[in-house]
Image (cartoon, rainbow, N blue to C red; front, side, top):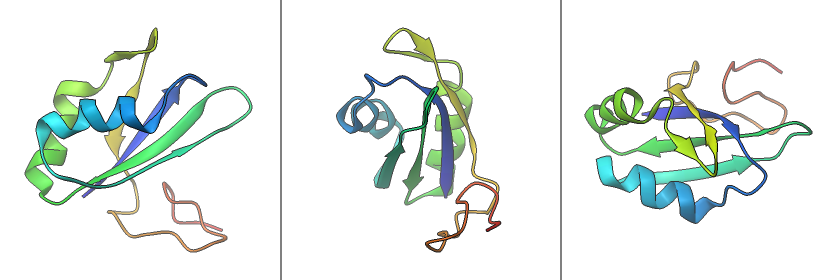
Length: 91
């Protein structure tokens, strides 16, 4: 089950998020993308129940001084192709 992470600061590193999200279950994938204003990323759990708990407990959590957005990825965890948006599934 994949989650979308929003409002990540430029200072946020994979290790920061790995430590935070691993508290709720086995993370199988974590990606951070950098934008011009703020970063975003995706975390994927092996067990959907762990993803559900992470959304409820971590949405709004302050990471590097900024409250992050944690929500279910809108493509139901399907991996995006090279020209496809992971969150929305559109090219």
